[in-house]
Length: 480
Image (cartoon, rainbow, N blue to C red):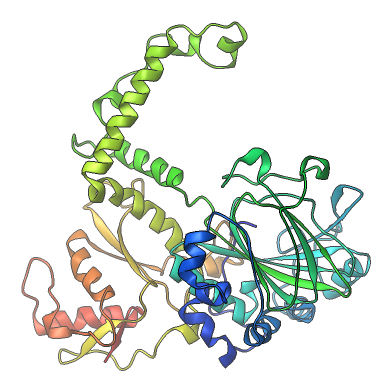
């Protein structure tokens, strides 16, 4: 249930955006966890405990428009008539779980047209569509808004299961999951994390039901219901009378303190300064002959050498690094945060056009400007190892507008790949504070173009207007 390719703004969509989706744009988390208060959910459930959130009539109506079996039929037909059909293994998987065994039943022919999908569905297979927000307007808006709110990637899958069938074996995932029931009913059984190991950073694979113990929760989801599952929650589900369709929204994959620590360590290794680089104990070499006394070979012959000293030296170095992080949090976390940011900004969903305000006219020296949308853009340092390394340090302003495609792992075309080159605006490092101030501006607190502070010089009126116009043309700024 991890993240994959994100929706492409310019791609023709199967369904038009409707006003019913507007409430998804502002505070999608509150929308999903209602009737619970958002803060109550974050304090008592997030990363802690599953919770069943029953539908309101309004949410039932919205969810029914998000995705259905008819949606998959329409998408398959539209793709077949367009650039090519959906593909088994990449876009769609067919699976069936029976007698304690899950089988993937993708045909040898890769084309997943409507006829092939309906045949598998009639044979009892669950159909899983990967990242349906690529094709469904409402899901695109929901995923983009949730990414903006959470500040990390959000993936999605659609599951269509025939009546009385189960597609997947019991398992747990490495993501936080919001199960959104859009059609029919599905019975869910939840179990404790395997071995009591909470918040795992890897998926479990298929589990033997005999090893699960008694369910901790059993619930039948109705259209409009949401079931939240912390990562590590073992689960299985079976459609009831009539077929079932549900969407999973998955997030927080590789988004833990351990992942941040890994980036902090990597960033410190790249810095050659005493204050923010690796502390001396971590820079010191390993004991002579270290490999002779550690690893499987050493364990097999019960040879640990002087392992206590090696472990103590490593622990001392890590403690020294931890002290640096506490003493200089902004400096020590800056490069690590920018590293995470670069991955996020390049792989996230672009905003839906409905989520962006009108830009107004091109700014002049007499105009006031403000950021087109909080959370859609970010200033960051270039990643160590990027093509610009060895040149003057530069900042990046990542552009997330309605004209560009984002992917995570694979693209659909060379054109999409070319678009990615246009998503990053590169400026000299000194421009960072100026751009950051503009990105923090809002409609009710705009910045006068004449008051923009260009670094290192007093910009002429022509320079200021040209700078503002460039950011406006790039989709970053609006005029008041």
